[in-house]
Image (cartoon, rainbow, N blue to C red; front, side, top):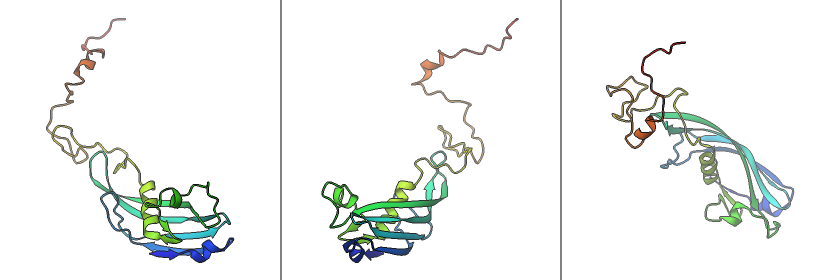
Amino acid sequence: MKIDLADIAGTPGTRGRYSISEHVAPTEELFCTGPVVGELEVENSGSLLLVRGKLRGVVRLRCVRCLGSLECPLDVVVEEEFATQDTEVGVVTMDRDEPETSAMTEYVLDVSELVRQQLLVNTPMAPACQEGCRGICASCGQNLNDGSCECAGEQIDTRWAGLADLLPRDTGEKKQE
């Protein structure tokens, strides 16, 4: 969806309100399970074009511990600034600073791109399927949430084996007092 904001950008003080229901195309880094919905308000402040609003969507992610799939609901607050013809030359905005990645070109807002960018920025960096996720066995790859594996106790990485000598050893003897 694209919204032509030329009328708002040309008249300081004007506003527009837009209901959003956007299907985001799946990519390698982002998969939405349904439409992203919300509202955006665009206002010409006299020196900037302000885009504010709230979006809600659900993204499918991979757990960083067990690699299982999980759905993560996101509530996103949008606050973006874009230049108008009245914006001073020294003011940095995304559409001026990085026009090739901006969601706005010549006062046309690409809502799909804005939504995609906002979801990516607000997606958790290290999502876990559950707070106590046990992950996968480093030796055999068994998902430890599904049960224990047959691997021997704790495997020591030979690169770190020298550090084990620094730890006190439990000999099984009781200290006498």
